Image (cartoon, rainbow, N blue to C red):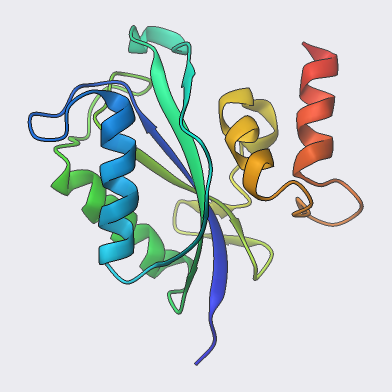
Length: 160
């Protein structure tokens, strides 16, 4: 059986009853993912970022690199279960959330099936995702060609 490497984004902008403020929620989520069997390869610093849309409160954001035998749908199921364990409920898009976990990149390249797209469809449009990711995987290629995480962040900053 083969191991895959993934880049995962973590975000929080709501306090958790046990873990506390969003920065601590992120740290607790990293621990929960490790306890679930994902091997942590790298963890970015937690960054405070302004909210997008109607989410209201600022977010704490980070990214991790993990190794696992899970294929993308199995990893997505684990991430959704982790969000639920932290109290996340499905609701308004762009709303406040205790924990948001997204698959950004996968060592297997592209994946597109049943609502899951890897690389993440909005990866290159989100500074709050690229900045933590560039700290741990600056040279990871995003799709075919020469574009990597560092280049995507540079392009986004130049455009904005």
